[in-house]
Length: 335
Image (cartoon, rainbow, N blue to C red; front, side, top):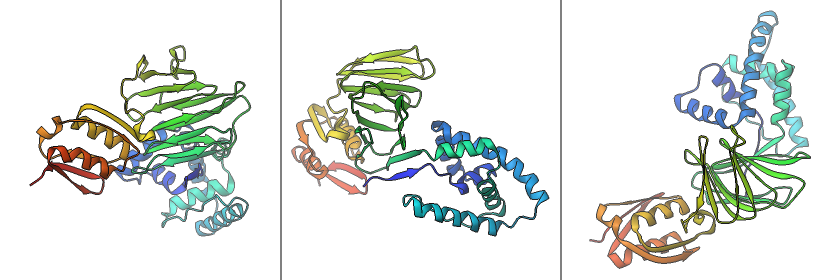
């Protein structure tokens, strides 16, 4: 079952950020979110303005933060009855500053900028495939089907605009886009933009570049910062964007889409390369106890096989065994 999250502001996280109370790991994760989500970043800027006004409000008015938070909670509860998907995040014990800040902003709507920004954020949804999960698919209202790889996220609007269908990808996904010649489908992926009318293709943003592999149809691949820097891709084309450098070529990796297709082909392939494909396909970490084992060759084809069956097939001809500990797998010589 898919996970959907509406972009409702998490006041505890925002307040911890604004008050400088985040741990190092929390700050790192939050800054990554700000870097890829400009709408969320706008909300932070608006909140900073509101907090400045909140200081003067608190100085002039007698303000009961507990009553304010209760009013906020009651308001959310009423909204939840009309929208069952709306979740109430019960706050951990807020510091007084954090609860007051959130309560003032929600109750009184301080700042026209904030009101506009917050309303805009409510229009988006997020579909997530967590770390370690098998690929997950979502069918959008236009009929397009997007399959996410593990540790990936798709941000999409509740309703597409009249002129375009625009989404944002973080991670990797395979897109099967429903044709609509009057409304282009546009994907923002890091510093790249991919524009199509109806086609199927893969986008990978997990490295320090954006990669696109086209399966069917035609794709326009361009740099957001330099839109004149663009390529037109057809089936079989493979292209990458690193900073402003666009490169086009042919994909020669038979297993590039194995994470989605679960089909793998190995032709006299060294086990260290086989392990990389299995890591990517089954979200595991395969290691070898002895370096010499990495160079052993494997020739075989697998189609939706269970990982254990593949590992047994790999190990048997070479008198090897494997040990599993969660997602960690060690391949070694049999005693």
